[in-house]
Image (cartoon, rainbow, N blue to C red):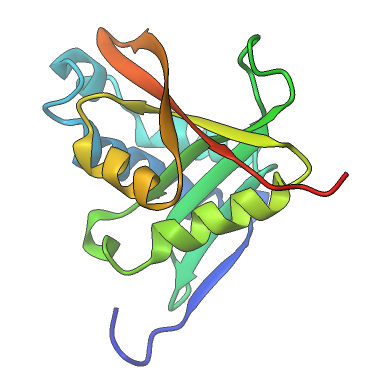
Length: 166
């Protein structure tokens, strides 16, 4: 990010499918190679990622710099049966060249703002993804002792309590 670059975080549209799909595809390769089995990485498809982005732009923010999408985040009502009154951050991905520039934090903040009606926000992260765990901890998330298996790997659930006035 050069000094003239301006970061814009905005709601995604279906017109963002190419850029968001590329970030999804490339970020999985950059993040999960060595964490997920090779077969999972080998089965990734840029075309499938673009199609998914085109068909489901809702509940998504994109991070845009100089007309290029460099990251995205997705959110929704919790899918976990034991947290029916929680919001969920489903994904935050930023291209590796744009890490450590505050983009992930800004994407997370926008999700939290959209989910502020919920008393709790949850997310799932691979137990082996120490960098992401450290990031979420720095943003106030804590491990809540729930685990599940994703592609033969253990994921942990993290949660953040929100202070709401209801």
